[in-house]
Length: 122
Figure (cartoon, rainbow, N blue to C red):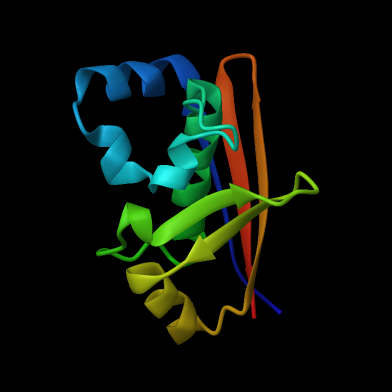
């Protein structure tokens, strides 16, 4: 059963500018594994913007309640290339209340825009 669906977009250039002008913003939004590629290099702005859009979409799929912590949701990619989300803390608590048992995630970025769709399934 579908419990919630969320979608969000982020303008890549604007998101990158916000990260540059706000020290520590990346660390408040992302866990360390989201900031780095598997080889240890820093992840690009387009990829980070898509992950940010996924976190916004996830919050919308949960009804956008106050109090969710950005770092309580982690967007990662399986070896197959499929994006996934892992939740803990505030996000896991809200998901549990709603009966969410699994997540479906789609990420994209093109033409200066990053987008994400998240489906919460119970």
